[in-house]
Length: 186
Image (cartoon, rainbow, N blue to C red; front, side):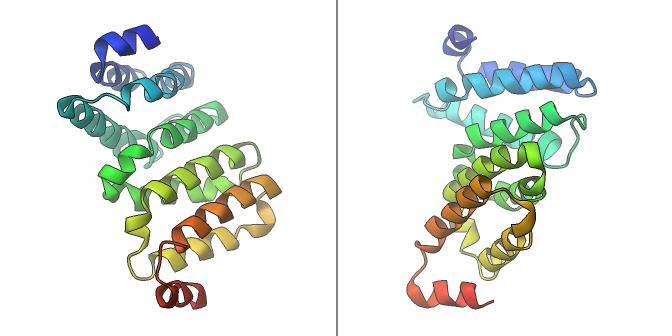
């Protein structure tokens, strides 16, 4: 799979997105495609050519906005887990398309309190927060995210909560002190 990604470069994600579109109703195929996308992420996200990076960003944007974030994939635990792992793996793209932050968090936050998915959700949450921290600096956005995490406090396990709180702390540390206090006091 990695050899194919090396040869096909950004087009490997195009092919995988095509397979996902073709088999989006079948959870077995969907989970396999998501697993493949996760496996090749490290290889294709480091491609130096601007045209390749643009192709990857376009495919990731379509993947997230058409399939993952609106919940258009089969409702199966392995598909949800695979989706969260793909979000975590491709969160670097969020930095280049900040419009993915809000729908991404909308998808991830409810999964923080879903037992078997919570750790994967926490890792995806941390990645989106880290890479999308500029979007979270919009007035009131950080307070909304903090409220969403703290409202699930009793339902989130210790480890996923620690991962989530650490991510929030990293984002808050990028604020100047008055802005940080303003967000915390909301």
